[in-house]
Amino acid sequence: MSDAMAISRSGLDVEWQRLQVIAQNLANLNTSRTASGESYRPMRVVSGPEASFAAALAQKGGASQPGPVRVLGVEPIAGGVRRVYDPSDPAAGADGFVNLPAIDQASEMTLMIRTSRSYEANLTALAIERQMFSSALNLGRSS
Image (cartoon, rainbow, N blue to C red; front, side):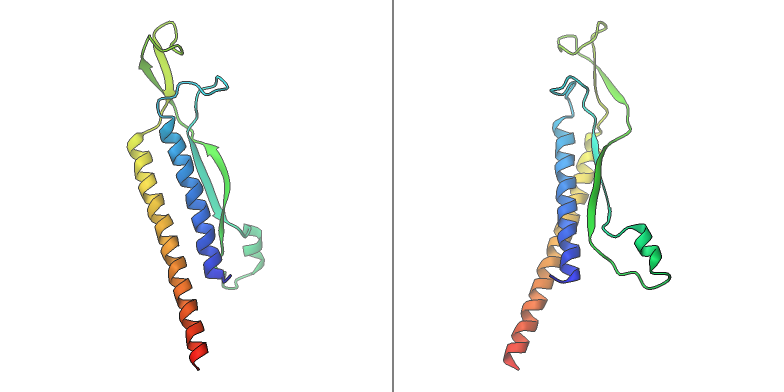
């Protein structure tokens, strides 16, 4: 596999993971408690280059080559709690309010669209590279 294909493939993996986390956040938009009894915390995927920063510094001014990316972790979003008045909810306090995660649905949907476009761009780049390799093989056969 070429470097460009590895970069596109790693981008596909990262964006797929990001889409899964966004879907999980949207699915738990109105979840007051998880199965463990804790309140749901919205998550974000943290991604970055596969090569470490120290390795990039070790090149000492040499042109750095782009490389694959990877998921560095999935971390909770620092955010507040949305309080909703619903005395019929079993998780409601004595005052009738339920603590829900402060997830902005519009922002999550916007991030989902942006992530799906990045996924599509990586998929397109991968397809174009396959087509280029196929054309090069055909040229080599006809010569």
